[in-house]
Length: 320
Image (cartoon, rainbow, N blue to C red; front, side, top):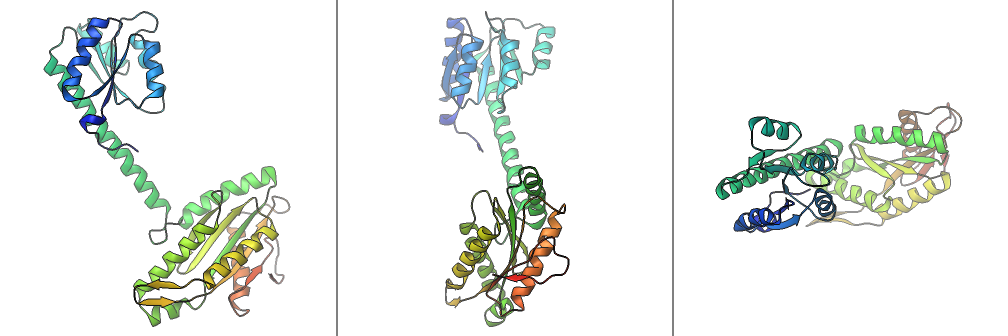
């Protein structure tokens, strides 16, 4: 996402079929060290926009081929918003109203005073900065809302939303998925023997190990406390088992050290799978099945992996 721009970063596109007029506008805008791009037609302007990161367009209206209004319409069809100032010999009130209603951000008549042109251009560039800052803030806010602030993983609400989408995909293509739940063994001792700051450090590091061991198509969340939930896409029971064992060994083989404090830990795992056939499972059903498998692991000596079928009513979990 772009932030505020300095003078050397400003790219302004001047579009005018009159070369003399276009060069005059360009020379004025270069007073503030803007990088100027010039086009003599609407078609050429659109080509330049497609190849360059343009911040502002100064656009003539009366041009052969695509006129200013038609060019502006094409510009507004682009995903990225670009500010446009109409600069035209037509400067009656009705012309200005028509231009602004067509989607222009500002309108200036010819002949123009250089200081006024610069002031209007700078005003649009400032508005561009505000707009981009707002978009950046909204993006950052969305990330904060969707993720756990301690581990950077998804929060459960976001995970369930993505899991529901993935379940629908599995039902359609029957490619399979696995839901894995893991819990740090004896985590209370970590806090009791050290402090809660070190406990938070351990959770952060476990979250990092989870992220390092999943693919880009997988996703994970902090379920709460010292529990984590992982969704593995396009994965069957064998693949899920391999993943759980690999991550279990990574955790048990790691030394969690923060300054003078260090500890070795283990984790228990439970997982279930879904291939889109049989009962119409919901996200909460798969999480519940993974939780039952985890419960079996916690009661079987910990530091192990268990499986529980999502469509099982009350059968025993299978240890893997």
